[in-house]
Length: 66
Image (cartoon, rainbow, N blue to C red; front, side):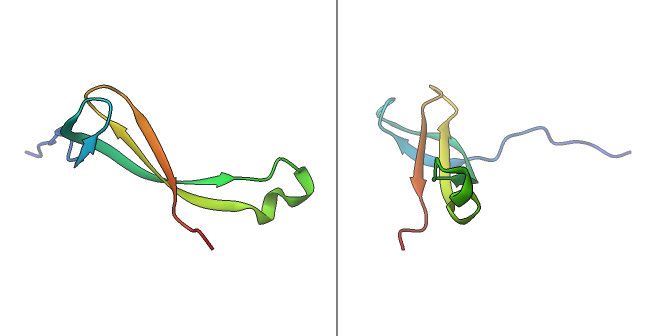
């Protein structure tokens, strides 16, 4: 019989809001930085998004600073 493990394996990081080392859900999102429609396809950048699973605070950091 197959079993399912529903546990969450997040990343432990410091949360500035909580002031503690807490579990965070971390993902990479592609965001469009240009507000002009004609340049939008050329202004997509990856961002690292981290959300504290204790308090819900979300932070994002641009990954490509070229």
